Length: 248
Length: 144
Image 1: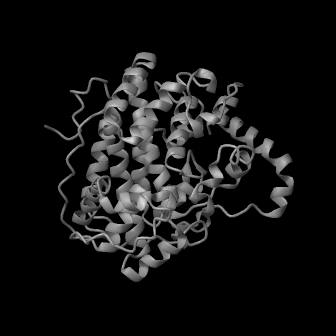
Image 2: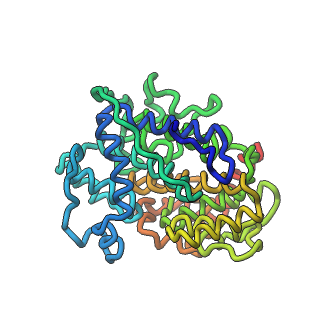
Image 3: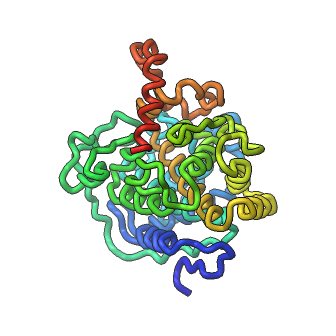
């Protein structure tokens, strides 16, 4: 059976959604800039394990998510610190702090590896979230592709809009000039900047969002071209954000 | 963006649907109650309640709307984590446009609110003037 075969779904699913999900899985499987394909697929797997993780549940119920010093166990090929970061981002992202983030470097989680892992994790969470909402079985994770990470670091990085370095739109290099251009205009909202340390994660984010929500071009229009109007989409978006305690 | 999208059509919306959910159509958005219930049950993971919410939304709005809503849920499961796990602050226009309802809806009690520093004094002083302009700019932006 091909990946993301939605033919048995009781509710017809657009072909471009299936295409976007297949592309997302292919993106996860391929070596990135700082993680191997095996590490990227392992990151996606951890987002699933986090949902049933006893330690995450214990932390979630605690007044402070940092009161329990017990670490998550390392699970090859991922270090304990990276497993912990993925679990926290999956189950309790709203209570992450700058102090916590700044402690990751001493545990071997560089800015680059963190941002790329986060980019992979949120893709898996997003696709799985769609499946869970519709009551569809989760797609098996892809087989990792061999190859070395490119170790490509973009130009024009600054650390001023959040915890992680992001590309300054005024200093963006030619190779990343597409990241901030929408219909030929510069659009650099903070959520677009957030993952620019790993440019291919931003590109994957845009492609998936274009199918699951709206393309950046469509986000600037009232007409969605979809079965939900813009207000209905934004109501769902806002309710999900509130339930996740996301201020942004 | 919810308010901007409704105001762009010269409608009114009850933003408490964001924080409290919608129990009827009073939120000013078609099928608001079913859409909110679907989002809530999808995130809470109660399979039976989620199946009921799916049936209710499908019956009211149709299969295509149900699929779109599931896709938007998936999308914002991602967006919220990107924002919170990178510590980004609200953009200035959004900060201004939402200044009148953030406290009322309890959004400022979220831990991640700490990622947005207090607005500079000049912006706080000019907020009564600037906030309506920011709201209108967002609605005009959507109207094209």
